[in-house]
Length: 495
Image (cartoon, rainbow, N blue to C red; front, side, top):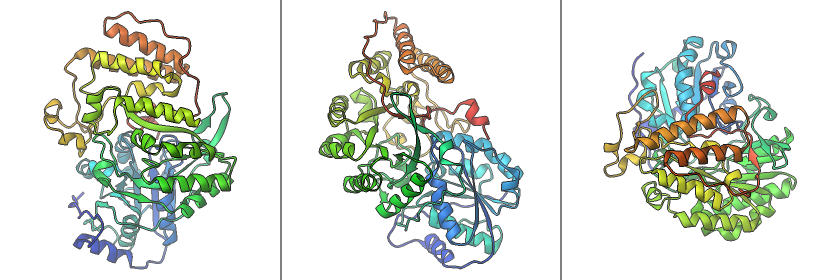
């Protein structure tokens, strides 16, 4: 298959020639059915906004759109048959690993289709994807580009030059997502309350991109400090259709709900006014929790049950390497602020990095015990190993490349070996133990106790007895995995 040259990147303002061609193609009106299949490999158990939004765009323009969610469905030969375009969404590492495994079968089932991969991990892996036969690679605000591509394919059959920008951050008009082609909402991850009861959970996005530049974050190489607001009316129409389908909880998927705190608060108020019985959760930076702590009581009054926050580490040196813009003690302050507001905090971590020591890992576990957060942390968080994908801003760190091995296409990143082999052995052992416990539904505190013993044994230290109060269970989503965790064999084989 002919290779396609990289298209221009567009960040707003006066478009380059490639972007002008992209916009020109978008003005052509096409009649007649053209079959598009949108594929989602993995989205943390959520009904994917990133399929529903482009589905709305493409259906509006008269294209026949089908959706396949590989977390719940198999690749269906009947659905893929006669597709003119198959577009695969890769918003995270796990999804990309699954997509790479699925692409050969997609090509087999849809031999004449134009293959597109879009999402945060598409531009970062452009060379690899093109080597796998992918024709078009898109990132950023992709819906106008997908519509343009469909029009060109309908007219030209299978053009071999990508005129759409690989990355576009130009502002666009969001449609109300079309979720009609996706599996029922009740089949996706649900909210689990501390008493064990469950609620159907919906998924909405109030913004895309992020104004922060955390080095390890996959949003940064694409959006580079830019974020785009989804109008509140559009978000609320999306929420209404999900509530109609049975949702009594909404999980906001914004990279940071307080990138625009006024917008976030507007959404919380609108949700509560329209559906006072519906609860929600959101992701907010530690820095934003402190800067906008005064807003937290109103979030709780509007139905916020828990906030996910990327703490990443309790070691200030590691936090500086990651450019997190918070300190270890800021974590303590955020715990106090959310607790005072009556909102549970669900911290996430990159537990293993090239700078992690055995003593540092023990310090992380000890801090979770001290803050009574053991029940608030999914055990997989204690296994996460720093990923360094192509294009990562970690590669800008002076001297960091020297700590890495060569790019590994199977892992979609640059492997690294810790200078202390005990750290790598501990990570592997903890990952295996947590995976086993997840399969057997072992309670979080029991998994933590096992990790506690393993970490102390690795450091050749006796493991102190854990206190009786490790914190109370908090509301959580039922999907136990995490976007930056290595995919399981079951996930890789699911399609």
